[in-house]
Image (tube, rainbow, N blue to C red):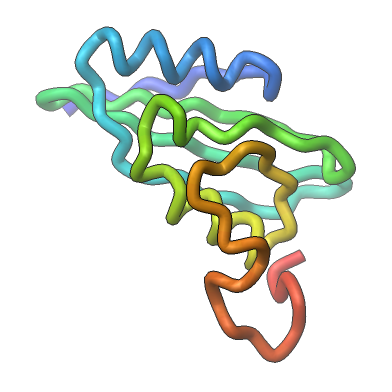
Length: 110
């Protein structure tokens, strides 16, 4: 299995995701983690035995576009990143508006 990491600017996530979709890749997962003053987002795509991961550093006050227009299944990952980490994601096709999870505190991993 081959794995490739590609650093992507937040404003290019739609274009890069669209290219992968056209190349036959499917969305495997999206995740977030906190780094000082920012979020690190990893979007993982797979095709056969190839894995490509988009690595995005998003300043904590910025927002990123949803990829649900390209990969509809991304809505669950994006709602999770929003609810648990506080990542600002615009235009999620199915947006739970912070209510996907019931947590004792808002955005517990922020």
